[in-house]
Length: 613
Image (cartoon, rainbow, N blue to C red; front, side):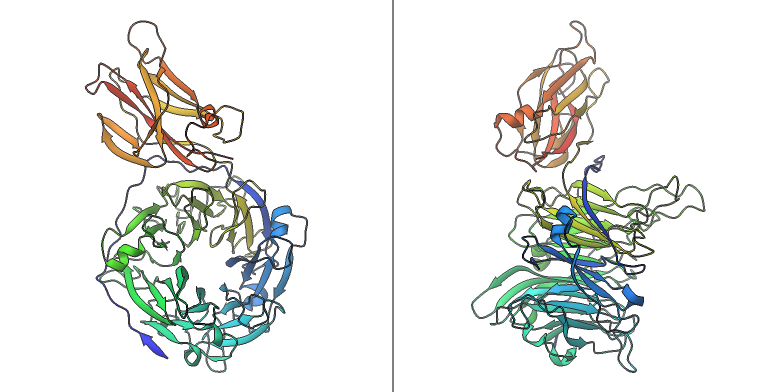
């Protein structure tokens, strides 16, 4: 086996890109189904992946890891998509808890590896990072699970004591001639052992033995860097008739940059002809934030034709003394070209309140503990981003600090929050993110899966898997209005829900306007915050203008009694703007005449909403 050297670049510090001050997340989301783990300490949902229909009922299903099951021997469960949709069919289609030792942690990672056994049914590779052999502890392993028989057919084990192979696994797509996916497997180590990421060809997955004898290539990292703790692969996949190429990303959250212990970094590039190629890295210079503790790569977020990297830094202080955490979307093309700036979207958690007293817990929410480059949820053609904060809490009136956990659904197109999900008390939702699964209700939009492996819903640390639909979504205000010539600030607002089908009004209003002056609402599909006519333009060009209105109010004199009002659902129903389909993000602002001001105009703050079905 050969070892590919890293192509090193200078350490790069993460910069902050535009965020829109004052945007509040929409909390209106619908829980479709909640499934508790099978037993206390099972940690059901620590990993979960959407898989093909397992029983021919027309629904995609979910494979769920429970590495804490049976004193951390571990298990996997196939959760029925039909049950998630309706709640009335068989909940678990099949499960496997193979013979293992206490602490083996079978089910810590799962990947679909196509038909590795040759029986015409997809198979699965499952990580077991706590696997021991005589005299060698925590060397780790991966097991091939036959998709037809649901039995373990092979065991590939790690090279060193403490290598913890199998903590992360990702399918790459076929890189050779057999048209079956290869895999990369992480061995992040225990702080002492060398870290590795192994590339294993599909033809070797049914064999058992030492990984160095079966892998075709590897990346190596220094002890303590935790290279391979997280990884993703298979994006931008192409097949050229005799070989394939795919993009990959690997997290090394324990990487020490100069003067910055545990700053973390990600290593990415391409896999080609069963080897690692074109390798680049992006290192944080922020001490302790552990960039790369979560990674994913599946979608192009900036329209340059290349799938981009989603990364988490869950221990980032985020401008406070607390480990609030953050995430970011990085341009894979700019990293490849070493052409800054590298960030497409910065995804901070936002401000937090300090503890009220010394007995209250610190708000160490660890936003970015898990990330997912999710399939498109709102129908705009761009994938979304899920970010989990499993240690999020709010004060509980009965049970104290509740550690609900939190998941944000972020628009891949705009980088703004579409919805915020919070778990039930003690759910610690957000450390397992499967993403989109299926359109269960037939509204044209897929439902999606999130999990909290430390949920106490079915017993202490039993875990929980939850299925949500994105809609309905509420509107919210953002940005800052311009003080008008009378000392008033026009304020936008709304009542009702924007909908592509509802006959009810969605009234967008603006108050505190100079009376008897014309104006109009204008909108686009992205926000901004730039100086304009003495105020702030909150809507990015190009914009669409609606019809002119008169503010009314007092018939004489000058006052702030003017008001605008527009039924935006009527505008939707008119069909005048075909881009306003269900799922579209809209950013709207009122402009009005103000003859006594230097610019002769006035601007309100802005309204953000999504067109519901």
